[in-house]
Length: 322
Image 1: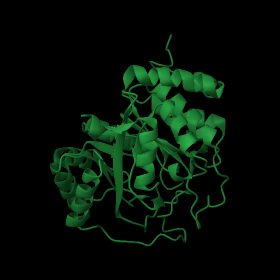
Image 2 (image 1 turned 90 degrees about the horizontal axis):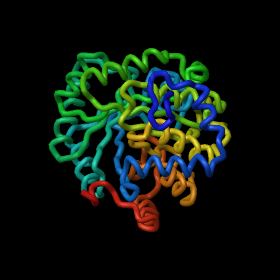
Image 3 (image 1 turned 45 degrees about the vertical axis):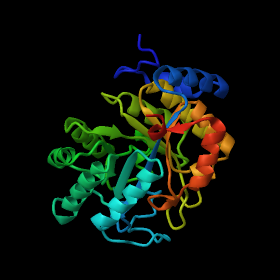
């Protein structure tokens, strides 16, 4: 019988539903035990995320401020200069980050000058001693291979939500498109960063589906970002109800139990959480955050507030512990 702490492709969706339905403190207690079995409980992986090309994306993701289909406060910007990106990466390194992530608002990677520029960015950032991550939309096997050759460590490509809720959020690419990109990334030997977004009108069943899909990926993602929707004016989800802090804790705890060896990222929406809510997420197994002022186009907690919270909790960045 498959146990929840050792999931495999025959993990039942019903088992994930039962896990999410457990009393919150029981769930957090078990997740904390799993976390301490597989990870250092005093260690936090810190990344910075930079938008290297902003806006004008042709997709219709209902949460996204960068879609060309919506009128939002986000201003379009062309591909960043390589020297600017390297400078930002150097500053991130000096602030204690050990991973630098670069995001371009594309539906899919297209061969040509822009992609060549991204490959050079990866090479230069890798040369600083940072782990590298990019999120560029869909890509094929050859493009994934070239990213690997350039030194890419992680590719981020989220599933966003469960399959049943997906067509209410995105219509311009299918769930299978996302899974195919993840397969291309994995076959190229790049580590997978894949998670989802909470607070988009999904049900408990939809959240269980998302976690189930992530847990049965073979192998499981090395990095799992759990995001809370940051509602942006002009998007279809601008009036979405704010997510209760306990839902973030619950999903993170379940993710830790289902994917014991993954790095679980407390990602977008952290600015709206209290210190107490974030602390419970860390106890439940979140062991990575994004630092810096912005996550692509949405606000992030100020670096000084992050430093104060981590000090209170006795947590240290990976770069400080190695």
